[in-house]
Amino acid sequence: MKKILITILIPILLSCKSSNLNRCDENVLFKETFFNHVKNIEDNIGVLQDAKFRQSVIFISNYAPVSTNQIMNYSRTYPIGVFERDHKKWIEWYEENKCKNIQFKDTYVIPEPYRND
Image 1 (cartoon, rainbow, N blue to C red):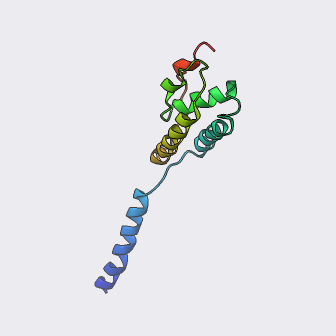
Image 2 (cartoon, rainbow, N blue to C red):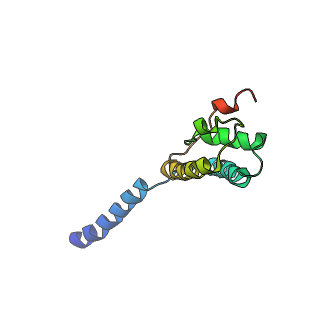
Image 3 (cartoon, rainbow, N blue to C red):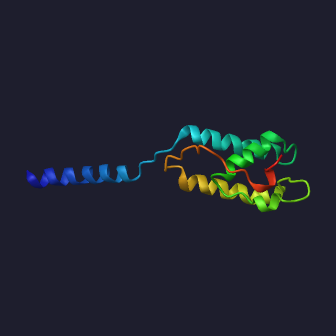
């Protein structure tokens, strides 16, 4: 009887332990905000890089890598080719960090190209 009970309990206990290890504590509000900013940049990269666009770049740059040194051109615009490379990094960054309950920062650093605007 003990062997049968042990044979049944061990797989159950192991599955409970492994499910705790795979628990993801994703901040859904952060996810929505992050991807809204990504979408704003995607939608406007070749159209209108206005204040709202810059606000999205600033938000993303405070969490994920943004090639802000490439924005330091004469018009302070975000080149499309640079954006395409950065976009991949943003998605990778989010996938790597999403289960860490990402929190909003209290203050945001403004990248140099967007200061004094």
